[in-house]
Image 1 (tube, rainbow, N blue to C red):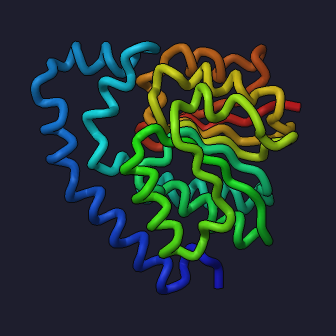
Image 2 (cartoon, rainbow, N blue to C red):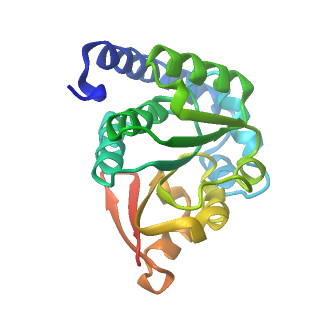
Image 3 (spheres, helix red, strand yellow):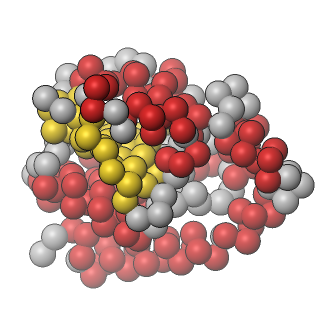
Length: 221
């Protein structure tokens, strides 16, 4: 039986997804004082992103169930050993990726999160899922924490932090992506420069949208 569908692990994911669903109203309230234009401006800002995401320090910004399953499938199918994640939040996506590493026979998942309270929540959830030994959580701004000590080759990247930083984070690891490596970007519509980059084969990617808000890209050889 694979980790993802084992009864205890599936129950953990069910609880976490229910918590994320219940927190949607709290997420809306966190930015209720901002106009749609102001929210969009902060979302696309490369300097003010912390002002936006600090509003969500107590709420899970989780991937969907479908995206979680996609992450697991991609990591298993690629036989991934080295994965990097930008934006841990409460660790729902981290659990899916680490479960794939476990079922692949092991590996290393590096994930970055700048909210200390979320780091603690994610670590607790990884302990509950029995996967903490596969995960290194780096606390702080990913522009710093993901700048050094990355694997020589990376099999899969998940971008799910500040959307304006997607191109900058990709820059930090692009030369380590092996041919055929996957890059998954959640809420990618909020990062138009990133989309323009990965949707151009001249930049070394094939890319397609997945679902309503995910961009799935593959590094060309």
